[in-house]
Length: 122
Image (cartoon, rainbow, N blue to C red):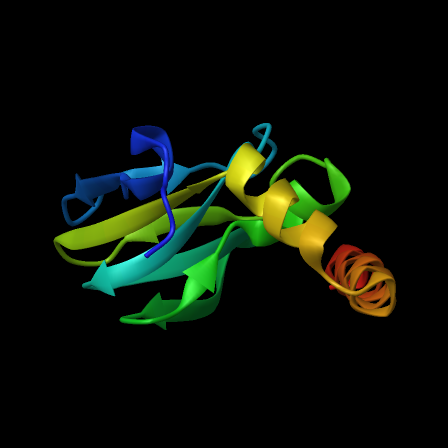
């Protein structure tokens, strides 16, 4: 068994209640989230009001795009019910990304750029 520093073993979790925002569109993003229990709605502001882009439930991840390209959040995340999230820090994410194949890192950047471009046109 490998020796791990205590900081590496700790998985931080946070509970959000129904109607509570995890983050809001336009905010700086330093965390991504993995849904352990519950459901989160992803909402985009539009000229005609809020638009539900989709939802994320158990096992899903969201908020990762801001970690990849250091841009503000492109949508808001709202707990649709009581939800437990596992927090992925920028440091954890960047370490995993550094360890990834350069081709995969390049693909991720292209995907994020394309998604942000499409979202800006909606």
